[in-house]
Image (tube, rainbow, N blue to C red):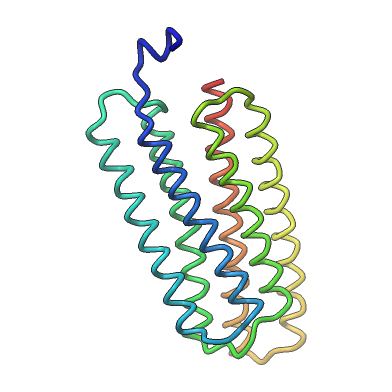
Length: 209
């Protein structure tokens, strides 16, 4: 045990909770991709993702509870709070997107929905790897590389949203434009939230290396 660990006991429960939360985000992202690839049984699939969102809420609540009763923490309290909130935000937007598909009675996914969902899933996988690395930061560049990739994926999503919106106004009626645009934007916001997670992780890597 090093001097820092002896002076400041490391409460590993936070890392366990973050890894659990990141795993739920990844699972939800895979469920989202599966929904877009196989657009059937929408109500049941939406319910499954809602259950994952509830599970994420429970883990996030556990993190806050643990933070409130911990005198010494392995990360700064604001870092713990920001990371928990940003991971939970990704789940919220995945859940909100699928519910919009159901409520708007979207008849089928399209190539833009599929590609945006895949960008969310790819981002979630990168985030999970980075989250596992903050337990013991040996090389901050490993985390930084994952965060850079999430940023790149978010830029791709921005471009894809722009193209989807342009094509939407050429092919849909006014009501459908509102519905589809809302879905596209929520998918893109989910990638923004992934980037928020990456930014928090990047800051943690720099401060604690």
